[in-house]
Length: 201
Image (cartoon, rainbow, N blue to C red; front, top):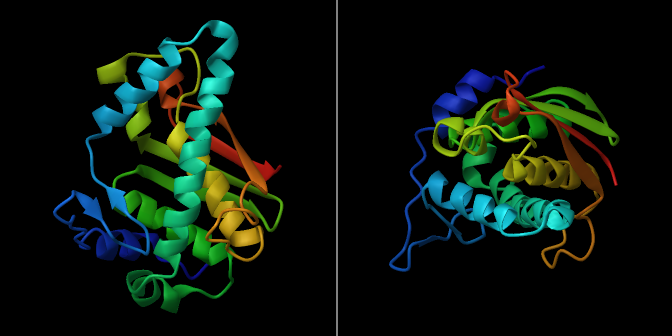
């Protein structure tokens, strides 16, 4: 594989993403923001803790869906950006697999999750491991009895959509939700790392 994770992480860690006067970052063709991880973790925990047991899975699905949509549109902006083309582009020999490896190196560089693709079956399956991710912060939120890396799950599914789901649709009506992700391991439940298995929906 031609993808040099170390070089991508080193180069993309230098990229400064600045917000405008409203606190939004018009980067990569979408508006994003930078809020502390504690804010998002607290929001997710409050949401999950506020519903009865029979609605927990539905609440979790909403959190994963939000991340999936964000990952789809933001991911598209990232992999078509000048920064991606300059740093990762020259390394790409086998698309879209190398693009996926590059995208997860950027995911690491920007502090969302120290993650890497450990298996790809083109157009069918991807397995991602994350050795650190902001939703695994047991020091702040304590250990849980359920895997709760909703952001990583959604983004993993979205990245596979971008790779194999067909042409990107800015309206999100086609091309998205062709893949789904299940979290099979989690630091937050006592495992050494998080593991995310993406398959066709």
